[in-house]
Length: 408
Image (cartoon, rainbow, N blue to C red; front, side):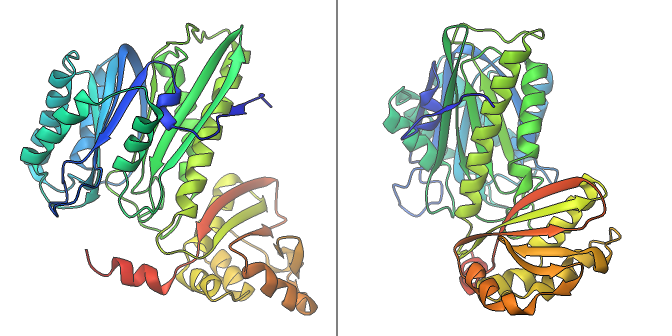
């Protein structure tokens, strides 16, 4: 394991050399609020970029724009992001607005043409308030800085129903130089990969070739942002971007396996940390549950079982009621339809046996109750059919979630 140093009191992207950021208010929601809703990530040095996006057939304009740019542009100088409006399902005007947002940012920062990416999150189906956004982007461009406060402003500017900002940074040494990976994320509802109504922006000062950068990001997303679920809904705007500006002075080459391993673990750590914070900040949740499916025939089977349980409304509501209703777990696992054999099934709440070879351990019921009353707990399900494992972070489903989401 690489000796990663977690940066305390992380300011996210500004912990990484060469990245300036800002977060300002453009009143995107048109409610007269000064809530931060427009952010910029900017690197004067050209940066290589990698991206992973929603697999929803309906993709928001900024997602389609980013996917196009990453296919044809070699270097970038930044990312522009807004919250409060998803710019999704907005027809041809949505793409026009996404391109105009980028142009405004590039012109305001004297950056080269086609050197910015864009992301949006918020309400679906409404056109962006471009008159107010234009002013906000210009202000945000003037305020970019390396200050930690700016890093926190950026992290706050991307939030929607989140109750807190989400930041994480780590560093490690190689060849006498320090490498940093920092990131921010948002997400609280519509969280079901691949991925969720979730944005995450990561940055590093290591120079990483695009092919390697993309591979590292895909792997990190697979074991973090794509291994969580809150409500089973997949969004139109899911975006994870990773920028590499090389300001550390180190270049990752194909032959440098040690450096590649260190960098991969750093990106994975930051991604997992941010994903965990997203689940912990799920809309009106009261429990965070780690589902560990073990002994499956293959990883696909293990994941299907985990998602069947993690997205079951009956399971989620029993957790909300502090009810150790293992029967609902077994039922959900069964309708994953991967060939589970009941007589081989073992279930544990933390370390406490619930089922052993399909038979309930009824005398442990009071202990099961103690476990599911906790804010965070783990359920392990052993299928005893193979060696494959899969872990999913999920939550309960509360009355307040329904009340919160019944109207926008």
